[in-house]
Length: 193
Image (tube, helix red, strand yellow):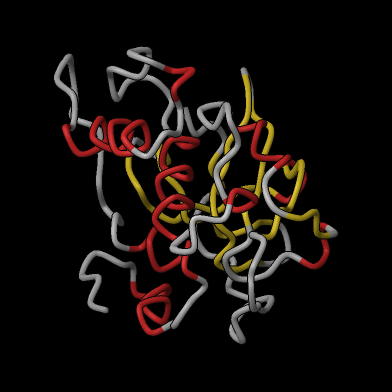
């Protein structure tokens, strides 16, 4: 899969065969909010896609602007698209817009055992943040997520902010689910809202 905007240090991700959530998330790499009062129809379309699938009914018309934090929405559409078997235990949490609700997704994994494609939940001022593990360095996790600098991108988040590591309920665990040690270049993200 060709992902032209992937930074050089992460281009190896394009050749990873899985996990499916990672593959689906990478398809949206680079999608960003529209500045000002306009909204990116692609981001708003994720909510309509989930509602059409019977998910997120509690949100009704609530999610109607990309200025509303959307890291949980991004993870929900990624999980939905990856769940080709349509197994209920692989659905996003009911209140998926709340990043901290992702602490109930999949199966709990020790923080020290985070691996490629795991869902990482972080605390931040005013709430939480959720994204996918793509690697770690001595002080941070490298996270593929939405609403990171108002776009789908990879950011470094401090390990001290980590709340939970959750692994999707795989029928068969992909062989490439493994810890990945990366260099520590780039600044730490401090607030993903």
